[in-house]
Length: 254
Image (cartoon, helix red, strand yellow):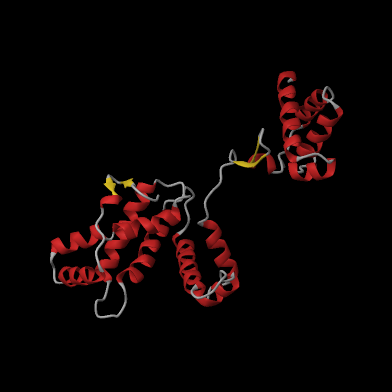
């Protein structure tokens, strides 16, 4: 997002950059109720919002949406900023902007999560930010749970609940020729009635020895492609190709 970036119809390359003195003067004016100073201050700090949004560029949500939510966080930071404290506005605003974006991503998750779990997750994320200050590594879940005085199991469950969902059709591995999907790595534990089983076994007998071996391990024993790969001695991609070929053969046969 370096250089010229147009987001929400705004060319960020044209956004003004104010000096610390100008920022301080504007802040005093807007706190006194000057709406023009408030508007100028918001507009002048949109580059700060953009810099925070870069942390979330890998999310599936629209960057325009994330930027708009970040601007809401900026406005909240302006409204709550105490000019009597000896703190730079950006130091106070960045955590507010990040928090607003994270709440948006959490609440906009495709899987609905209860309010209590979201609250625990939010506390855990805030605790992680606090504990990580001045450290080279992230704090452990044990430290976070102890800091917010919530059982470890609940913290783990809450953070897992707000994590991004993954499509079963999303590639999990690629050998340069063919992708292995997430669904290919999930064991199949479904049950069939006896008639279906007999019919399927008759069709399986028409397959090659290797194809029968892979389908037997995959669908009757319930092993994953990785497990089959390790046991048979071929790559997971090869297992995937043999499995797909065998299934296509069975479809034509059945």
